[in-house]
Image (cartoon, rainbow, N blue to C red):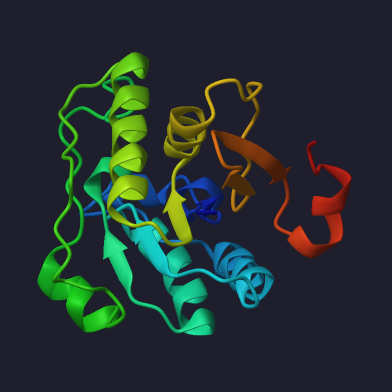
Length: 212
C-alpha cells in the first residue's frame, strides 16, 4: 500500500515578532502565531487543499494548533493532538516543563480538535537532542503503524527533523524554516523524502527543491 506523510512546521510566532511578549505572558512557552504566521498557515491550507489527506496530527502547543486549524478548515478534517510531536523540552530554552493552554480554553476556541484521540507519547523535561529525536521518531512510527492513510503532521522545527529522520534516516540534514512543508512517501519497501519546500510560498517554490 502507498502512504504519504506531510510534515509542516508552524507559522511565525508572536514572540519572534515581539520578544517583549515573553516577559509578561502567563504561558510564556506557549505563544500564539503572529499576524504573518496566520498568513503563512492560510497559505499552507491552500497548498494542501487538493491533496488526499486523511488525518491531521498536531503538537498540542498553541502555535501548532493554530497552524493546523487553518489547514483543517480548508480540507474539512478534525485535528488530533499528539504530545509526542511537541516542542523540544530543552532546559536551555525553558526553565521548567512548559505549560500549555487548557483543554477548556482550546475546546472553546478550536472546535476542530478531536478530544477522543489520546496521545501516544508524553515528553519529559528536560530532554537532550537525542531524546527529542527518539521521542518524535517513535511517535511517527507508531502513527503510521496505526493509521495507514495519508497523514499531515504539524509540529516544530525539531519534530519535523525527528519525524523525517524517523521515517527516512538517510535524509540529508536540512534547515526547517517556519511553515515549511516536507513530503515523505512509502515507495513499497521503504520511506523516501520526495520534496522539501523551504518557504511559505509553497506553490511557487516546491518544484525547485523537489528531490529524486
